[in-house]
Length: 142
Image 1 (cartoon, rainbow, N blue to C red):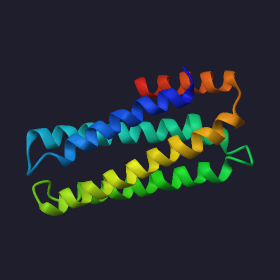
Image 2 (image 1 turned 90 degrees about the vertical axis):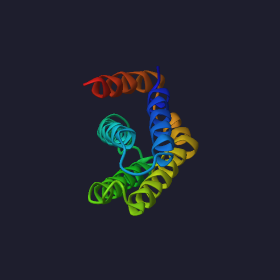
Image 3 (image 1 turned 135 degrees about the vertical axis):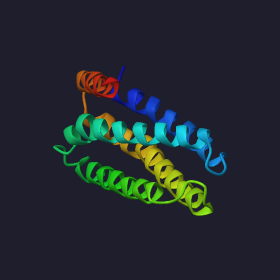
Image 4 (image 1 turned 90 degrees about the horizontal axis):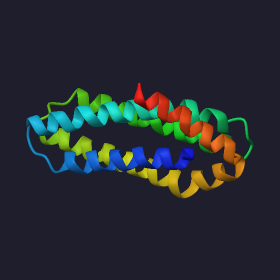
């Protein structure tokens, strides 16, 4: 497996969780569970992605800015999660903030998949793509 496939699999999980979350209402067990899963998934993914995708790509001239941009977007996502954590889950403001998070994450994922993966694919050789996937997947399992 190559790093791009590993990342895409987790991106799909995140999309599914966010879609499910915005379809919930009020303070419910389902909303709480989906949100807990999403937070965990986003946190693990961002750390592993920064270590095993962005960090190796910072060394190349044609991927350094995209790597920095991706890391900056992870911080913006973290701020939106903090906002959600500070908002009562049963309020309409929570759903509004959740939709903002969904929009931001989806923008980030689409940008990675349509722009960054292509450029990174040219910077990394086949062995690097596979070893980064192995490292990423190992970290995601822990």
